[in-house]
Image (cartoon, rainbow over all chains, first blue to last red; front, top):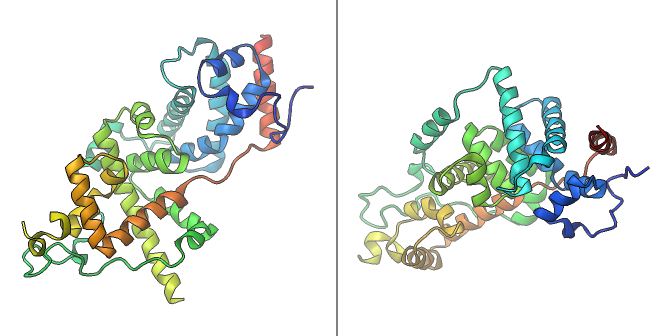
Length: 228
Length: 85
C-alpha cells in the first residue's frame, strides 16, 4: 500500500520536486509521492479556477477530477514548453470551457475580451473627485476613501473573504478569470498572459478593473463595519 | 505645472487611482513612478487607497490547502492503474 493521506509527507522534501523537468521525470517514472505532492499543491487552486467557468461546485469538482486524469494521461507526452503548473491549468481551462459550452453559457472569448476592454468604468466613481474645472485641486478627492480600521484583522475574517469571493464572482468573465489566477491562485503575470493568451497590457487593464471593483465592494462593507 | 493646478507630483488623484495597478505591477516608467511616489508622499487619501488595494489583494489569496483523503486515494489509484495499462 503506497497510497498516503495528504498529511503524510513523501521521503523527499516537497520543494525538491519544483515545477520542472525533475517533477516530470518523477511522474513518468510513476512516482506516487511526486503525484501526491502535485495534487496537494494545486487541487484547491484548481477548484477555484474551475469556479470561474462553472458555477456549480459539484461540477467544478468533477472538472478538477477530470483535469487530474488528463495530467495522468498526458504527462508522457508533455513537452515542457510551459511550466507544469501552466500546463495543468490549461488542461482545466479546456475541460471547463467544454462544460461551459454544454451549459450553453458560452460567448467567444474574443468577444468577451473586446467588450470588457471597451468598458472604461473608472476605478472610483467620478463624483468622488473634484471636477476638472474646479478652481482648486481639480481631479483631487472630494469624498476621500475612509481609512479602514485594523484592515489586517478585519480582512481575514471569513465574512470578508466571502464578500471578496462574491465580488469576484460578480465580475465580467475575463476579469474574473484574471483576478482569480493572479490574486486568488497567485500566478505571476507572465504565466497568466501565456495561459489566457493575453498581452501584458490587456492583462493589466483587466486586473486593474477587477481589483478596483473588488475594493469598492469591500469599501461598502468596511464603512458599515465602522458604524456598527 | 504648478502643484495647485495638477496635484502633488504633477498628477491628480483621479489619475493616480487609475495608475495604481501599473504602479503595483511595476509597469510605470521611472519618471512616472517618481511622480506617482511624490504624489503619494503628499496625499494621505491616495496612500489610504493604495493600502486598501494591497489589503484587498492580500485577502483574496486562497487559504485552503490539502485534498480530501478520499479524492487523493481515488487519484492515486488512477495514477497507478494508468501505469499498469
